[in-house]
Length: 243
Image (cartoon, rainbow, N blue to C red):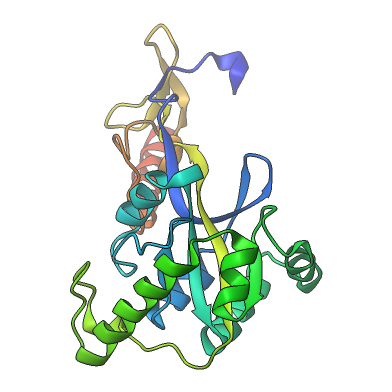
């Protein structure tokens, strides 16, 4: 599209989502499906200092912002064995191979991506998390799960579940760059414009390729509706021009 010299807006604005593990320096691979399942089952987010950091069942923007505030801009998802099994299944269902995950565990922390398991003492040593503070955070969370009330973050009681057994899994959680929030400039007819503002007579834009659809932040789950509706308008305008 570059030879057309199309007008754009907000190209310098970009999407940042939670639920990532750093598989290469500066490059994170998403764990959203697995991470969401884990928190539904009661897993908690902690930082290197061993403190719980957020309502794990809150909207993704809150999770993203909480992780960005932590040391090294990294948090950890703490799971028991039953939760890890579901987490692992969804990782292998979405873009991770069994071999990859085995290699992550073979690193045995603290090299990213951090995947460690064992007793609570083992995982804190391997992931370099403050053991005393994590034990306190876990004790507090367990009491909240029993009483059905999260006194730290007000998490919905349906997601408060006690940990089972003495085997723990810790997986790093980093925020990840997704794509730009910007794109091409259009008017209501969805025809694209050149940098000097001239309308291109036979090219329309639709979906997230149109700049300004998101604004200053992304709209998770809403862009499907925008893609369908703008696609309909663009296609209809193209058909009208052919008549």
